[in-house]
Amino acid sequence: MAKINPNYQKLPGSYLFSEIARRTAAYTNEHPDAKLIKMGIGDVTQPLVPEVIRAMHEAVEEMSHKETFHGYGPEQGYAFLREAIVRRDFEARGVDIAADEIFVSDGAKSDCGNIGDIFSVDNVVAVCDPVYPVYVDTNAMAGRAGDYDAEKQGWTRIHYMPTTAENGFSPAIPEGKVDLIYLCSPNNPTGTVLSYEQLKAWVDYANANDAVILFDAAYERFIVEDDVPHSIYEVEGARTCAIEFRSFSKTAGFTGARCGYTVVPKDLIRDGASLNAMWNRRQTTKFNGASYIIQKGAAAIYTEQGEKEINATLNYYRANARVIAESLTKCGLTVYGAVNSPYIWVKTPDGMGSWEFFTLLLEQGNVITTPGAGFGPSGEGYIRITAFGDADATKEAMRRIEALLTCEK
Ligand code: PLP
Image 1 (cartoon, rainbow, N blue to C red):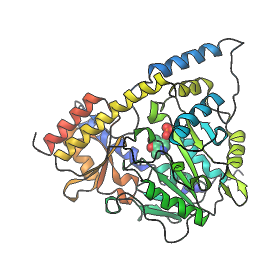
Image 2 (cartoon, rainbow, N blue to C red):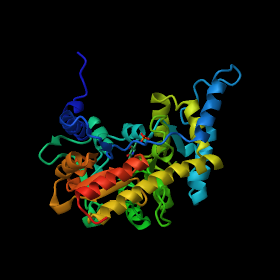
Image 3 (cartoon, protein in one colour):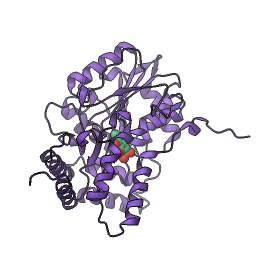
Image 4 (tube, protein in one colour):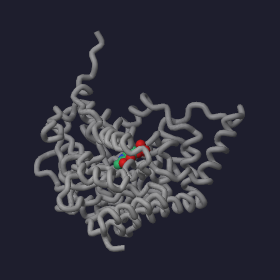
């Protein structure tokens, strides 16, 4: 008899987005004419930029001729993309990362999940609370999370680190020993960033405890403030303790095209094994590389024209973020994020629960947000709003919320 992985049976249903969908459907059934504006889900709305499309078309054309056709490529990614990544994302910021430390993939979600393959089931995992759910669920699937405690809304073996306004959205260094530490900056869902000093404390902890930091920088291109680190490798000592995930999804609208990369430095050794060699072994065995066409498109982001064009799109979303933050602040709400991030993390008014405020905005403003409680218990009392929407729809949503919360115009 084939036995299944029992850890899957311990997983709670993916409650958050299905519950949002359920409540939204219930409302629209009763109010079929309601013009809902979606400010909840983190997908982008603007198309791929012309330079990326041009590069992809060229690649498609190459695929149509015997002389220029590309079959299987290197599992780690084509040199043209890995080298462009090194130059723009690391060398230009004074960071020492080599092309053979870059592994191109079909996106950060796969890599954040798959990285667990190279770590033992015995490791103690630390995550922020609230958290991007992929980190937790993939460890639960691997059997690293223990059991799900429905009352505490958490797993018995996961070390949750509250990340709230009270601690400046900087999780406290654990007093005990943890082995794998997920950090995300700019953060989903809080939109906040970690400073050099805060990251240095984590790097020192990881090096002292032989832990590994799994640093998710999927929103790196949203950073605008000069003093915010773009990569964990900008922090001294990170080459011996950190893996970094990047994504072209939010950088350049690749949520549908799928491409990202992971950095595993050669100096990262645990139990006498090179994690770079292990990840290489994992990828060459289980992954056959991202598509040539998509990698050509991704490389176009690294040209002068491509960068100019994606910056225009990023600025479009940044302008939305400003509109949202200014409008909600005017209404007397406390907002976090929005500056180096497309996410606005909003404290609910008058101690309202996340779902209560979500329902108010849905039913009385016809605006769909994401209740913070869905990202973990410490997200209770917040909602997340995204800046990825259409600019006019964003303004309209804010007009409705302003009217609803009756703030001054
Ligand atoms: N990491 C974080 C923090 C995210 O919010 C997301 C997507 O929403 C991802 C990773 C996944 O990115 P990708 O589209 O590259 O799989």
